[in-house]
Every structure is written in C-alpha cells, then in structure tokens.
Image (cartoon, rainbow, N blue to C red; front, top):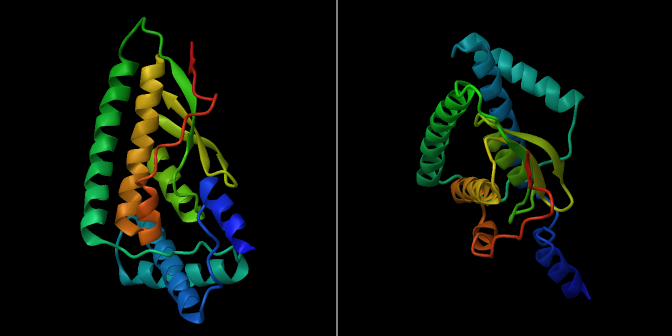
Length: 209
C-alpha cells in the first residue's frame, strides 16, 4: 500500500520518504551545522583566529541548544571537484552580474525592466531549496521573494529582463545552479533527478513593463 504514496511523492517533485535518522546521521548533521555556523561567524568578523574559532564554537552551541530548528538532513556527500566547479562558476557569475548591473545603472534614459519568476526545482529538499536560494540571491540582480516549501518553488525577483526569452534564460540559469550544487554535495538519488525534464514554468514569470 506504500507504493502509490511513494510514486506520488516522486511525481510531485519531492523525494521519497527517508527512514528515521540513525544516531550516526544525527551526529553528522550536528557536525555540519556547527561547521557552517562557525564559518559564518568567522566570515562576519573577517579574521581567522583562535579567538574567533572558539567564540564561534560557543555561539554555535548556544544557537543549536537554545533555538533548535527542524533538522535539515544531509543525505549526500561532499565531492571536491564538484564543489570547486560550483565555487569557480559562482564567483564568475557574481563578477559578470555586477558588471551587468553597473552598466544598467549608467544607461541614462533606459527603462530597466524586471520580473518575478517562479522556478520549481527538480530536487525538493530543504537543503537544496536553501542552498540554491542563497546562491541565487547572492548574485547581484536577483533576490528570493518567497519559497513554496511544499512544492519546491522559488519565487525570484530579477532585474534586467524584458522579454519572455530572457525570463526562460534566467529560469534555465537557476536550474544550472541547482545542478552544480547537487553535483557538489547531492546523493545518488538527487543526482538521478537531474536527468528528469526541467519542470514547466508557472504563470508567474511575465516581465514587468
């Protein structure tokens, strides 16, 4: 009787239900959460030092103890080559987008168009939604406005799109970001989902005139 429910989950864009987390999985997730929080703490201070490292560990412990959040399961594994490819392309996208936004700012008399674009991701997991949304928002000219967690849809405000073709080009670029993230840290099951056809766009996504 469980097969129909599993098929429905896959067809709707989500991943099949996973078994309960083992103690080993919980320890791994805590280690990853602490590592991310400490890294963010050090980046905020802008200096790598023992003091910042130790204070970051304390802050991470307090945050995870006092403000427990629903666990974001990390089911994949970190791949060095995939991670390097993502990082290099991410940095190049930031530089290219910064130049494009600068050019738009200095084009006097030119009307800058924008759009709100809905992008249903192929891998509907909390971790993928978070990482893809953060990566897209950090590139100048695009900002996440809302997330439909149940359906795995990102709603993104984009500057500098004036035609339907440009809307679809941006939507494809988000899928490329998602693919690079999954190839960097995704599971085998998530990698297989990248071979599925790109979901059709929703009504949201028409350029604002």
